[in-house]
Image (cartoon, rainbow, N blue to C red; front, side, top):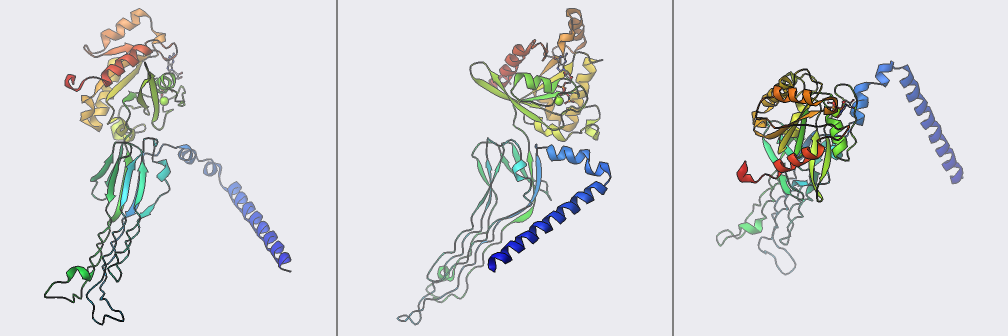
Length: 378
Ligand SMILES: Nc1nc2c(ncn2[C@@H]2O[C@H](COP(=O)(O)OP(=O)(O)OP(=O)(O)O)[C@@H](O)[C@H]2O)c(=O)[nH]1
Ligand SMILES: [Mg+2]
C-alpha cells in the first residue's frame, strides 16, 4: 500500500513539473523577440569579468558577560562566577593570487557574521563567532558605500585584513568583584558588531596597461605576446571588459599585461564605454599607448588619449610609457619616417606588427627595462 502511494506521488510530481515547464516555454514564446534575445542580457550573462560588487556586511555582536554567583550544595553564598561573553565574528578580507575577478562573490548579497555566545556560570567564557574570510583578488579595494572611505586594500597573496571587526564580548560579573563589593550584580553586555553596505572594487594589478582607440590592435597584440585568447574583430568596442595575459619574457621571467576596452574622445563624459575601466590601469607600472599605423593623425590621437587619462586621474600622466605604432606591416620606410617626424620629439616610440611579429621582441625588451628600472632612476 505504502509503495503504491509513493509511486502515485512521484508520478504526480513529474506531471506537475512538466506542466510548469510547458507554461514557462509558452510564456517565452509569447514574449516579443528582443525580450528573449536581449543583447545586453546576453552580454552580461557571458561577462565573467566582475570588478565591482555591492554587499551588505554585518560583523557579529559580542556575547554578553554573565551575571552569576556560585551555588552548590556545599556553598550557600559563593562569589561571583559569571564568565565573559565571546567575541563576535570578524569579516576578514584575504588576498588570493589565483583569483582575477570578483565573480565568485557575485551572488553574495548579505554577509552576516555570527554573534559571540554569552558567558556562562562557573567562569565559562562564551564561544567566539566563526570569522568569515572573504577571498579576493590582489588589487581589491573595500569601501564604505555611504562615506566612500577606503577601508581596506589587498595587495599581496595571503594578506589578511580584518575588515569589519566583531563586537567585543562583555565581561562577566566575576571581573567586578572588589574587596568592598564582593557581590557585583552587574555584568557587561557585548559590544555591537558593525554593519553597512560595502563595495568591493577591483583594480587589476597588471604591470603594463594597453591604452588605445578602439580597433587599434590591442587585443591582437595581447593574443600574440601572451597565451590569452581575447576576441578580435574589425569593429570598434570588440573588447568590452579588461583582458589579462602573462608575457613570457627571456629566461623564464614574465610580466602581466592588461588589454582595456578602447578609449575615445569624450570618454570622460561617458562616451563609448566611458572611464569605468580606466581604474584597471591606475596601478600599472607602465602604459603602452597603441596608435594604429593607419590613423589619420597620430599626434592628435596620442594627445586625446593622454587628455582622457588626465581627466580621469592626472597622476596617470606621471607613469612611464611607450608609444607603439601598431599594424606597421602596412608602412614602408618613408611612411615610418613621416610618422616619426609627426610625433612629439623625445617621446619613446617603436613600430610593431602583431601580424608579422615585427618589433615585438624590442617592445618586450623596452617594457621589461621600464618595469625593472631601479627606483633611484625614477
Ligand atoms: N594588418 C594588421 N592588422 C592588424 C594588426 N593588429 C590587429 N589588426 C587588425 O585590426 C583589427 C582590430 O583588432 P583588435 O585587436 O580587435 O583591436 P582592439 O584595439 O582590441 O579593438 P577594441 O577591442 O574594439 O578596442 C582586427 O581586424 C585585426 O585583425 C596588425 O599588426 N596588422
Ligand atoms: Mg580588443
